Length: 327
Image (cartoon, rainbow, N blue to C red):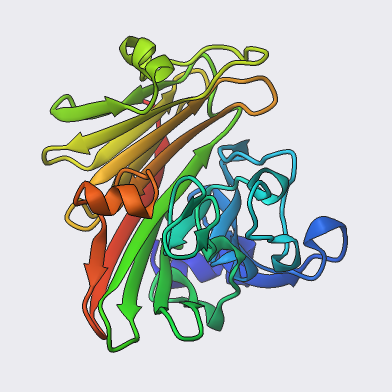
């Protein structure tokens, strides 16, 4: 629609699309800021500057897509990077970034690394959120540091077409020290009900290598892309997928008429972890582009999958999440 025609219908862009900053005033997330994004293409979602610029709730055309745990939104004050505490603060959300020193299980590699690292507990700085040139732009910088140790900068930028239904995420990770630095990063994208249900199916490229994480996951390999109703006490299954050329995953729900498509930079994120949890009350599908098999720093190093940034070197990651009508 041309600008002149659009202005004939609408006097204020925010009637149709936009971004605004709000602050929550109660609950465990009291005091955190949120960028609320709305597009004319039917997307509504929250970006959380106080949680690593991750994404919280997400809806497409009024239908919930994302997964929230029993904990719900959290604030940095509730983030306790101690042994056994992850389940008390993990909020889920459409995107939960894991890293940068560790992703995966708790482990000790010179120092203690909590489950999925510390990234989500960090607040961003240099924040911006505006509409320009047909896009909604949101971003800032997240720094993970240690006195006498590592210093990572992550410049994160979201580009969301104002009239579209897709999210482009670009991260530039820089090692701001004079020593090489090993890093791990996982983009934990979490799908929940009703987008995820027994009616949904997952489509992955045929040309891929699949490695189940546990014997129970191996038993479920033939139904890797199928889903059932919630089951009391069900054990989770995790599969590691290595694509040959097409970094793409599609979750389709024909009952809702919605397709969610995830793509990513295969050169910098070579593994897609798939978390399939059909347990009652914790019903979720995680699609997780990653730098490695998320087995802890020491094991990843021994198996040659731990990536390194040279002094003051940078690497770029990109992830795209888009929505359309199910075909």
